[in-house]
Amino acid sequence: MASENFSFKHLEEFVNRWIPKFIPDKVQEEETLPPQQKRKSLFLLFLKILPWTTLIVFIITIFYDPFYNWEVSFPWRDEPLSLKGILRMLAVTGLVGYGTNYIAIKMLFHPRKKRPILGQGLIPASKVRIAYRLGESISKEIINPELIVKQVKETGLIKKYVDSFNLSLKETVQLPEFQKDLLELIEYYVNSILRSKEFRENIKSFIQGIDFENLKGIEAGLLKIYRFIGGDQEIAKRIEEIILSIEYKIDPHEKVIQEYLHKLPDLIDNNKDTIEDILLKVVVFLIERINIKKVIVNNLLEFDELRLEKLILYSTSDQLDYIQYLGCLLGILGGLFIWIPYESFFILILLGSFIFILDEILYRMNQK
Image (cartoon, rainbow, N blue to C red):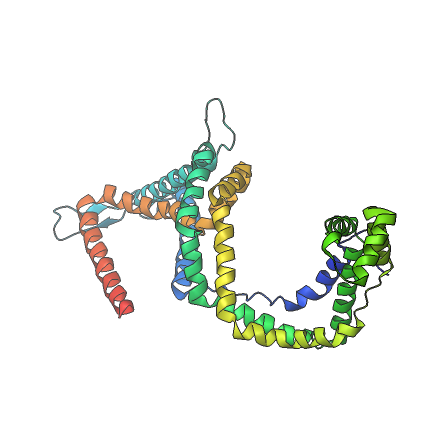
């Protein structure tokens, strides 16, 4: 027996029980680092060890210089070159290079809060500007209807999910439990509608709008007499009593509904293109109505400074670490320039040319 008060509780229970069976599992793509990323990770490990090595060398050279009496001769130099203090100099320039890069990167994020003397980090200070620029770029270049429609069509995402949904549907509609729940749901809501106050009011309005004067036949005469005696309100009241006494039973229609359920998967299968177009239009409609820029900006502005820092560090992966630790290596090279500027400049040109040519060859091989 249906309740007089219309409720969505039964529908919610039905949806929670059966809809998950129709939703396909999301395909998880395994994230793997390409070979070049793994090689870079080994290089990063070397760079991370380098500052500690230079620090140890610097401490040792304070008390002992293994090259104190050493000299090296070059054919193009008239006098030999002393190696005295070379280790300490390279260690100092390496540590200075690492330290300056370390401080520069930390200054991007720190201080998180504005300080009287130290000021505020670049990113926390530009938080609002970053949020607006990022929101604008994403809404224009990444999340826009044209790109999403193109991506969905190229991947055939909707058709894949429709096929998966259809397969689940074919299996589920065969289940006696599903059929029983669906029939009970239909029966409950039909009875709820018949007993709803809104439906009864509509029936009253409908009865009051009937033109009894133009009706013909014996039944029309009886209705006119009944209307004359009791009035429109009496007729509406009697019809309302009849409606309240009706108990809708789904059993006589069970076979028809089951036939439609069995035809539904084939109907979906034969109209996949139409369904895809409809769903794409729905997606485009929603995207056009949602202010993507505003959503992104508001979310970023709600980030505290620490969370924003973690987001940027996560997005940049190891790139900031490369910049930070590469300072030590560049500092050591700078020390060599101080020690032997001409030779270091010549070696740097040869080494740089070799790396550039090798990179170009490998790039063209990959392109082919």
